[in-house]
Length: 204
Image (cartoon, rainbow, N blue to C red; front, side, top):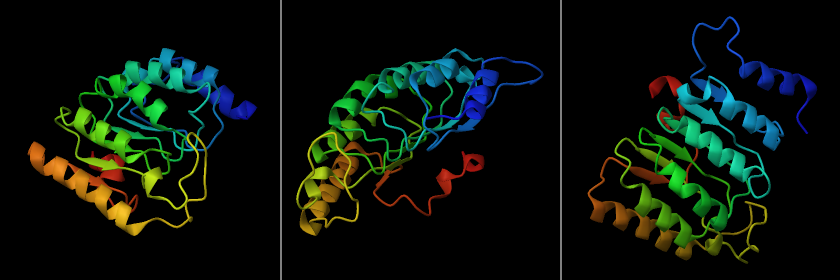
């Protein structure tokens, strides 16, 4: 669970105090947030100004999903960078977030590496986010249907389990073909979470 100190910090963020301007970048990865914490953020004066938000490492398969959706609603006009790596999200969770993600009209980077998403769900995400004009980089997980054996839905698994290279290559080819057909040559989809300059907030 989140520590008392971390909770105090989140509560403090909900008040302007002596800050002359709201925060534009917030990294709260792997710190055991609870729904009330995201509610604090949603109601804070920082939320509408956030450009970079990293909530990696939280379990959005349970009670955090709806608070996350509400937080994204508040940040949708400003958000450029959203990282949700290793958040135990399955297809149903991504589907619930998609309408809100599509309203993040300035989004440039979306990180979903390490989630339990299928090829079909990723294709749906790709198709429905083509309309975001500033989106330039999506880091996606190896699709669950490319693992041997395929893990059960909405569960965590060892990402060192063997991947069927032929299935993975076929999925990658489908994504590339969809991008080519759309004319979005500026949009990169990759399963490699490392070495991208766009991950640097200051390059946004």
